[in-house]
Length: 573
Image 1 (spheres, rainbow, N blue to C red):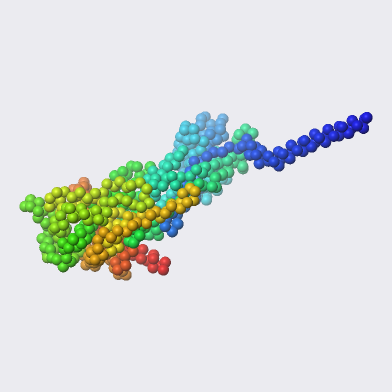
Image 2: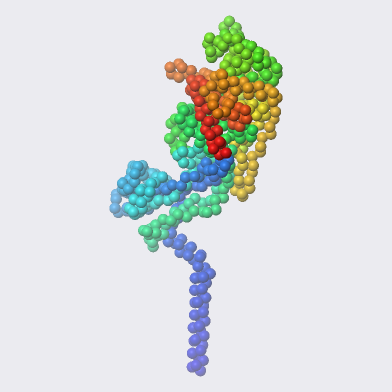
């Protein structure tokens, strides 16, 4: 009997032991991952950095135009700082001043007052974290890490834009903290594609029983690896864009340059000055007079004598003029005894052929031609060349530069319009496409700014290629090409010429109707052309605001850009 009791006790003990082993196995093996997470959650705290990631914007060769700068930033945790200084200082403001002073001593160029102010503002708004500085040097990182400052952490930062960003106006910029949104340029046009559902990187602290971060185990970075966002691939060639922007930085305070592929109508470079730093928009808000946020390539301007390209094409196509026809220039065109329009050459060009009049950019000759054509015929060719059509393939929203050609009634109205002044306002992109159409033997097509985009599911969506339309005969186009070559060889565009290849182009100086304080009229100066003249590949328009003349200001910039593009592609070959 006693033996039976012993066996019963043994069985009960074994049963209880088996249950315990089963429990241990269940929690240690089956539920290990979940319990570990719960344990970590009880002893850890996550703080979102609010550095929201977006999809990349690439050039035509898949070189990055964004997301290409990895740096390190300094973050402050105002609530941790206040808790650490509790009982050591009078109030939280003093705590922020103390930590700011220590940070300033350990780093180069970080201002203590600004750090303290940022911490204070963040706490007032209830923000658990605030970025205090970025682009930390290796020395800064080393000193801060060795100082063991509580409530301060260094974390990697992928900057959307760097200080030498290319295509600033075209790419645009984003705004927002809780939700980042594209508000200008490609960032706005493709906001839904570029935005991501991925979580912002998080700082994870391991805390003690009182909730305080454990020194030495303080902050680790956790980020979501699967970034669910799209990609936008532009027609821009980063190499050509760099050439353009370097030339503008040297010679253009205000203006724009557009480079287009003559055959495909793809925009290869587009730049505007003055520029801005998309990381610091506040710095340009007090410079509204210079409009640094404006993309001048999309802005409307009087094209001046560049409009003579269209007038010449229309007159030749309609057989209203022959290249050898002669015109008399006395330095002005007289409409009435009280109304006349002067030529830029006050003493006049004298007797000259039409080809010479084009090369000399003679105003009276073109006024005479415009009057021959009449308003309706000029309008017809404006429509043929789609000159006020603002369609840009790949640009989602319709542009709104409000470009127009509205010729006033009467001979003077025709005269002004013929010279690209009153009644004619076009964008540099439209003018570039006009020149590309002439260079491509009269074939017009809508320009493109994107090649394709990849949506968030990985599907590729190509931008439609333009349907080329023959808007003038090849014969007429060839004649205008010859006229534009003559401008560079013997006319007003000599400063754009190269010794290696032939250049074809046209100068222009347009009046704005605005004046400086000393009663000097503000002029916009242009050079538009293409090259090589005997095998056209690239069309370029250069526009300089507040210049002196197209020959002096814009033509040399065209020369520099075209020369470097030729060097680039001869090296590649």
